[in-house]
Image (tube, rainbow, N blue to C red):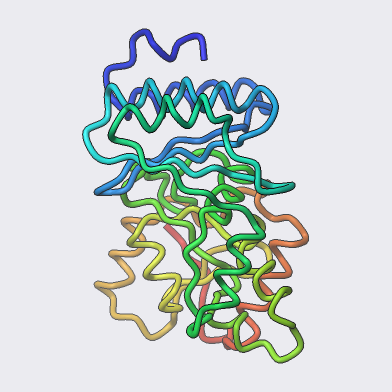
Length: 257
């Protein structure tokens, strides 16, 4: 936090500062800052020393924000929130919405949904931050946070239709940090549409029946032919196998750029 109040001109500077700090200190993964086109998001843990960092982070962001702010109380063990003094300070800033989230709360919300093929989960995004680090598209390297999304490997709609899983297991798979990658909007759509896929070795494959122009476009916008090997955990490979079992990989060829 030592650089938080100096040389920080805007949210992008702060995100870069946080990324550099977390890169140099891999154990420093207590809170993350990101943004969408209409919101700034703080994913803040609420216990131990993290609660003080979260409060300072919220105050700093409040003074440089160019859009509304959502602060998610990330709770892993119970329903604790930030201390009342911190909450009072943050609420007094006037431009921060404080949202409680935990696996318990999100599980309850998920189980009460009529349509369980859709998941909007702050815990899932936080789990991706913890596993993958700062938002960066795994296939093109784009770091513009507004267009980087958490892409499920084994999709929520696939999980919801799995007959061998009970509701709690479905939720746990849906929010697992190993069940996802950061992808830009473009690659996320290509991936969800099964125009591109990842094989068990992490190599990018593209459909055989694409036009030459479309193949050229994918080659020109995809700068990695395989994902970083550090992402290939056994759990991740398991989710890949689940995703690809409904696809015929014989109709896809490895991308060459």
